[in-house]
Length: 591
Image 1 (cartoon, helix red, strand yellow):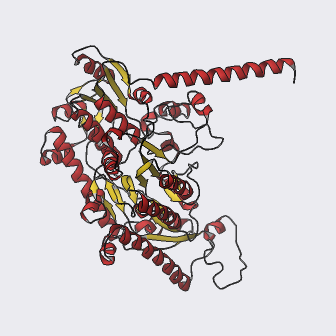
Image 2 (cartoon, rainbow, N blue to C red; image 1 turned 180 degrees about the vertical axis):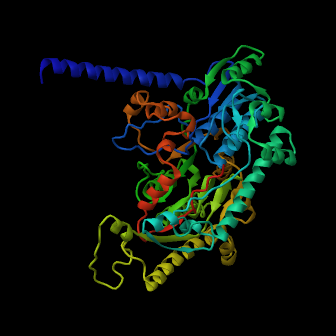
Image 3 (tube, one colour; image 1 turned 60 degrees about the vertical axis):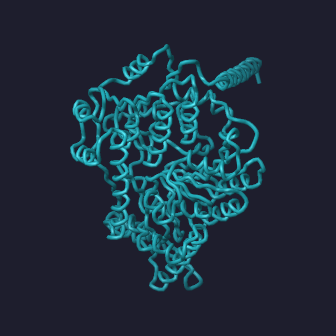
């Protein structure tokens, strides 16, 4: 090494150390107080909203956004802001959101509690439809820009079917199911919904529509017939929305902030909600509640976030977190927060065992987010209490499995596969041939056995009779509202409800409440905080760099690159032959 190189490395090292110290000082300074006197919080709702940190991808340059929020952080931040005498009000900026309905209800309820504490709430709706307006409707004043459109026109749900494309490609689906409503196989085996699938989806949509109508009527002072008439009359221009009483005034975001400032009887300053969260210090010591977040598709191994896939909830990661909560004396109760459509039966059963062991020693309260269905319900079954939002999607107690025969597709490209085997059924799960009639029967018995095991877990955990459990199972998806009526859910509510039940069950005194520890812990390296600012991006800028028209590109970088069709093909291509899945049918998205 030359002298010049040595000097350069020394300067580089000093720069890195100085930057790290500066970053630490800023973080410590931010955590030292709860904000200046007379603070008006300004909250820009994020496009996407997660339950937990996503696992770190090795060698990845994807760092957390500076305004990346998790559900429990927002709920806790708004709870503490409601009790903070320095906080005088809240302004919420709402653009298009890629949230599920249960998460939207969770945040809406937290804003409502802030309002009920006697503090004003202002909402600025720049874009969106029913979900975005549902959140805004609890505000004292709802505004939108003069050029905006309120896409308030009712709810719909769509399902994608691949069978026609598979036939054109000479790919043959070989799938079986257990449960007449377990329609997950239909994506591959049919070109449209079965009567049973349509019946279940209609019931879910009816429940969600009823919740929407009731919520908007209560918040805006309409009766149910008025709301239904308005939904049938939409979408609305800004002027039409104001005339209909859906919004109170037409203002831009900055003007809403100024109006909120002017309404205060004394001088206030504005603080972003993200900055306020950064200043909130965590409570230390004493009895604690563990908040264990179970988010993603359930699979064996570690939790991960593979490129091109949705978040994977690894059974090993979850088991480690559950064991830690069980063995630590300071943890008196656990809230298991589930946001999962299910996944592998084997991995779900491994997690179920640890939840059961934990619930035998400490109180376990389940809190359901957007999805706690199929394998997501499997792992919830041993809990002492199950809490769900009315809009949570749950149930789907059933299983399916199979394989795709891709030999026909290979031959289209001039390829061929020949197999040599020993044993009558040695290549039964081969992706290069169909099941024989005898093999299909064998595999059906395997899938049926998995369903019976799943059902036994529900019978044991929920205290239901076998026939009663089977009647509400059969793979049918339920809304949280309907699930309570049939005994799959105990209480309607969100995280605050679940935490309150956990505090009571753990015998934690009122003065000690608020001490929550989030598990599993994900490793974040010191350099992430230093580098995240260098690699921050927004969707508008990304679309511009890709040469895309922002007005026609769905918001969210992932949405730009992965349409539902592409994601469906990626899922199909990675489907391991013969794996038995406790997974929701399709990806139900109600808009």
